[in-house]
Picture 1: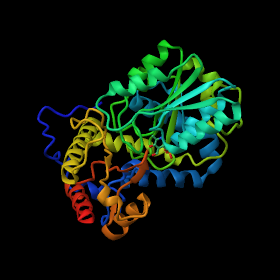
Picture 2: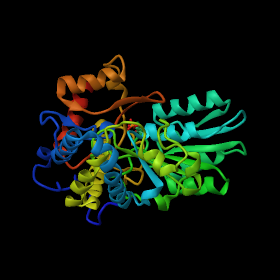
Picture 3: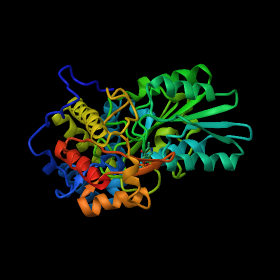
Picture 4: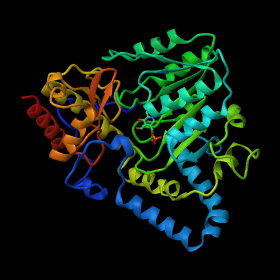
Length: 398
Ligand SMILES: Cc1ncc(COP(=O)(O)O)c(C=O)c1O
């Protein structure tokens, strides 16, 4: 994880990484866009790269998809593999982390008595995927509570360890959780599961671009990740990494021309698809390299740590995780005070109000009875936008 720099003072926001980085992104300049976490956001150069690829594809679809495509994707695998810390042969491209996780879950055979384990921080779509697979196979989905506020990573490891039984077949664990925006101690969880002979499917939807990642070193059994969130690649860019021992068992959701020809070939061609979002991921990686990925991660993390402290003070809210940021990446969840909740029928109405009346785009969710607001921090965000959020919520309370 990116640690705050020595000079970092969490009472102050970090210095911007450049002048007017916002104008390099396609985002509406009028909106305080504090929701990078849902679908990412893209710099113009990435969209232009995708346009160029699309024009090449449309100029000669057969040459592009049949002959040039596999070579282009091979090159992209080298680039992406270096970025993710993974051998090119051990991952395939997909359209979303959800698709990647479904490919694993639907490839494996579970039966009555088997337990699939996750925590109550799992993303709803992923919980549904687990539930679906469990129901069809007669297995049981066990959802481990990890209550807020969290004082340290130890609680997360202990909760999962205590819930393992001889029947546990698979643990699905978030690397960075969705609604609660917490960095989970994945390496320690993998270690605990490995000792018990249990496979780990890691949901790394938010990890690439947010934290310093080496997928191979972590060595979960399966690792699913998005490039379209924190790497700023075009929408529909994700990867699935699988340990070499398990690659033969895992197939794409779309069974197509190369079934039986090995993991890499099967994932390389999943019927006719628009591959331009993957190809333009190279420009997204290069965009970050021009600024320095380490600098980007540090800036975004320091902003999240400052935002947590500032908002908790401003709203008199108890932090959901330690104020030193040890459980944060580049986003933070704050539990909204009761006085705000009273003004709205449900959390969605508050989210819509913030957008429509105040031009602030920020996720507001309901999690275990709490209303959570989850500001995200990327290089185009400015401290004023979070101060505006603080003030707007304060005005709603009084
Ligand atoms: C932890 C987590 N997993 C999975 C997803 C789903 O991502 P996608 O729609 O790209 O599959 C999200 C989306 O925000 C998420 O936060």
